View 1 (spheres, rainbow, N blue to C red):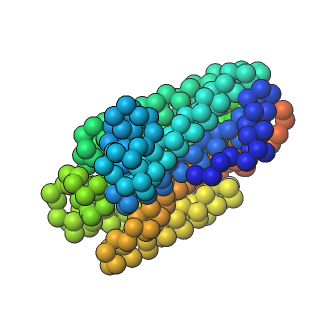
View 2 (cartoon, rainbow, N blue to C red):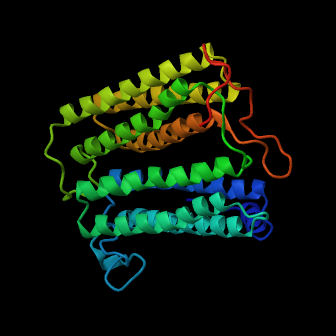
Length: 335
């Protein structure tokens, strides 16, 4: 991972010492990007069989925090695994900066402080799970749990990013209750696809180490389950997208739906290419990154269906728009 540019570091420092809603949102966005990056780097660890490049935890080897020549692994494997651990520290540093900025923001917004505090605490939890992965020699259950912590952490980052850009008024729905319930099912459907994907990965050829334990499931069976859940998610997304257009939902919500459909179709294409070409390593990393982007898009769509007034300072909320009218209902019901 490239070193942060001096300009980026300067912006992060200013965002902490002179925080505004905009600078806090900038830090929250860095958290989103950092957690997406760590998923991709974790995929690189898996497909290069570098999962035990640092065979100890919290140290890399024996008495050393950094890789050494006598670890029994290649220099490349050690570098990849150690680099993945270092990205975790970068994400933790961003989480701490976000929390400090939320504390220093005036006027202080308590819900932003809570969402910000969740970020460094979650990164620490992820590091502990990472240690369990190493100590269990890449057991597929612990590997799956380690992966799923990142989407959970991304929820905190995303909500903070969105909330820092809007006000604190009571949520005003921008669509009818039935449509909002349908949209709320999208993150659940995407989550099911993610969980099924961890089972496929735990059964497939890329274990992270040649001697790592694998699930004994039939790879074709678990791949079919994963594919079926993905198609159900696509179908639900299409239904929500059509409903958004038919009810005159805000343009921002329609854009979020289009983005989600595009990501789902791209994910499906990558998945089928993987299946028919023997699961090449670059596509595994791309598929993992795409899964996280799909997860982000689903949550952004849900939050695009309500608004909470202008952000402090008088700036217009990014998702503002007139509420959609529902047949037989004069105004949408509050969330």
